[in-house]
Length: 381
Image (cartoon, rainbow, N blue to C red; front, top):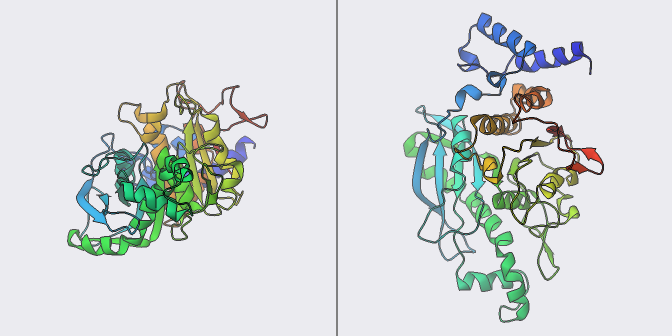
């Protein structure tokens, strides 16, 4: 791409970016023009999508706790926490993101705080985020899991597949929350909020990304070799942060073949654990059908770690902002249909943001490639 063409494409997108210290709609024409010229000359953090709306202290939101939705596969209701924008009008109508946390199950008398930073950031840019708590299963629920998958609960085969319970229970919890969104919406009208339950996305980090991809249509294989699907047709788009890769979490390279809807995956050089290298996290993006709305961000920085992807407040603000602003653009494009957000996704700005400093660069390490090709910082298929 020559310089003239690149500048033209950047100008198309940057003309409507919400960048700078005030929302784009509050800028005068001369101020917007000045920002546009500035971003064309040099991409800086101020050019990131809606970066002005995201506070460095991300928990600046309206939070409603003590909520729960019924679930037929559970003995208890599924606890949820609702995150809303910090400033609500008397008639706020908000699209919904259901966010499923990472890690294992939590105790039944607790509510998960995993995912609260992602929930807060997305609420700050105009979404109602329902954070799901996945509670530990009872003995009866463990037996029901085997029955649900055609296995005698008294058999050795049941013991074999029970370690796979989270592959079913977590996305089943998420589906139950989606089932309960209309009732949840009625319960929060007292706050002056209307939940647009048909404008729905699902997202999650780490183990929550596995649940997200299963809701999107990824099939999973139990330890006994049986393949199952828990796909849900209602969500419009999906965000999978630190995604579980092929040959992990019951996934194979073919598990992702039927994911046709828009998906954003985000991972990084340091996004690994003792038993989970980063390479498999990159691959789901390339296994999904190339429908033009599959996006992947790969942050090539040795300053990243697995918690970075959960927007850990201990990490650099730049790492957090580049992930959160890209997710906001993705949701605005796919859920709200915002053309300026789509132009942002299609431009070179995200790739350039990933190269802003020595700790956040999009030039992949030589050790990480896919079929001999280096993994780009920003990719659309």
